[in-house]
Length: 99
Image (cartoon, rainbow, N blue to C red; front, side, top):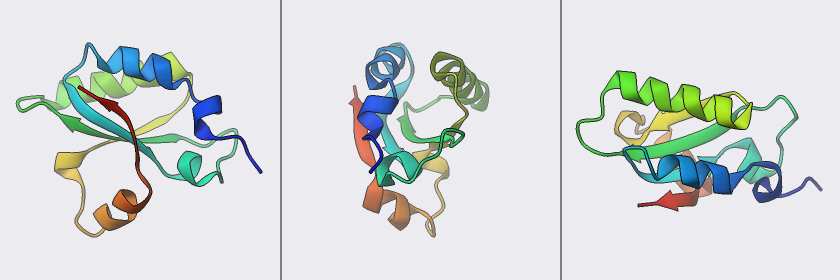
């Protein structure tokens, strides 16, 4: 069995990073939560952003996270989440940060 995402992803660094960002809540979901990740798997992160956060800031957050973790990040805003995909994400998401 693979290691928990909490031991392979530096959650404390993500939390520290989000403290200075317009992020209200952040969740990890996908292969790292399910335990079926590979070394080249991206990290799926769902964020709830403060009102007024623009696309440029969202992209900057994604880029900075990727640099921090040295890993591709699939960053998804809860505002832009498809109603067809939402139930699947809700089922497996794990809260890692809350302001």
